[in-house]
Amino acid sequence: MQHYRVLFVASHPVQYQAPLFRRLAARPEIDIHVAYCGLQGAEAAHDPEFETTVKWDVPVLSGYPWSHIANKGSGRLSFLGLYNPGLWKFIRTGNYDAVISFVGYVRATFWIAYFAAKKSKAAFLFGTDATTLASRNGRTWKRTLKKFLWPRLFRLADQIIVPSTGSQNLMHSLGLPRDRITLTPYTVDNDWWIEQSQRIDRSAVRASWGAAEENTVVLFCAKLQPWKRPFDLLRAFAKARLLNAVLVFAGGGPLQEQLASEARALHVDSQVRFLGFVNQSNLPAVYRSSDVMVLPSEYEPFAVVVNEAMCCGCPVIASDQVGSARDLVAPIQSRFIYPCGNIEALADLLRTVADDRPTLASVGRACFAHIRTWSPEKNIAATIAAVDIAVGRVRRRQ
Image 1 (cartoon, rainbow, N blue to C red):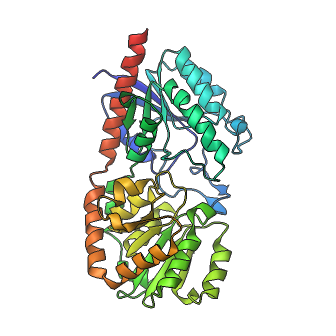
Image 2 (tube, rainbow, N blue to C red):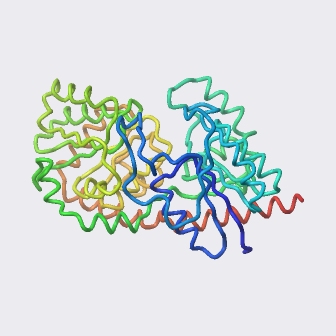
Image 3 (tube, one colour):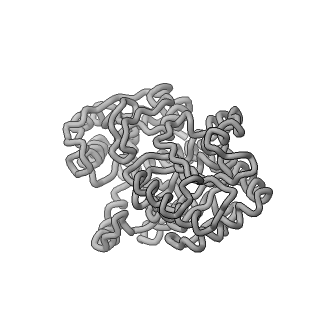
């Protein structure tokens, strides 16, 4: 394999991407640079979805070369919300063999990167984490548009990169050739999560929640937003009548007050805990001290919280709309996947796991073993292979 110069274009620093960049920077096959179009997360800023000020408390800008490209856009979720004209010169003068965009095509910056890469004769790689054409807000016209647009859009990529088998299958279903698609699995820094979780005093954390060792702790770990369907879990918990259980919501968001109100109406408020926003360094304690995590989302392209929980030995129950369910949950316990919105089915699952804690613990150990096979090393090897394919394709055309 040849030696390549690769530029990653990212909207902002992400806590699970930074460890991958550090590992890539240490690989001899490539020289990487990351162009950030904003510094949200690395710098304290109000996150409207968490409804609080967020700054990640783990290093996200160390161990790899990066630059900040000024955003001249509005910062809103719109085409011109992310507009980084300086990226044009950055790519044109960078002598890169490949440019990998993690910025979506609905942003102006994506097209700046695309045309700059093409002008520079650099390979351009991008993809999607979507596993369905359905949109988060359920608008049918978006599905129709994607069905027409995406086969044409993704043919612009010199190699398509996708993070899950669900995304891979979606690309295949749209008629895109298999040799144009590389699975680069969504991962977290497994070693960090495992090491941190093994340091946790589980009993002490559970005691702070008012949970004894004999209690079953059910965890929801996500933003409290409608498409995450936290009310499904609350209602299933109440329906299951788990008298010896505690339900923990880790994550802030606009639904917290409504959830607290409904917990009172369902007479389970004495068993429900709201932790609010939990920063990265404290999450291993949350997963390690829980007996099972439930992700009831109706729209969830992947969900790396599943990776995080499994690294900490926490089993996961997920709806069939969670992208990572196919790759991470099903191989361990397929019955832990239930039809999204089916509160009765979820309540039955909660009763089952609460009544059989030894089996639940065994599933947790199987999760831990499985997640070690879905590793950062696989992501890195696949990314390098995708670059090699894309660069070779571009050079053959010249």
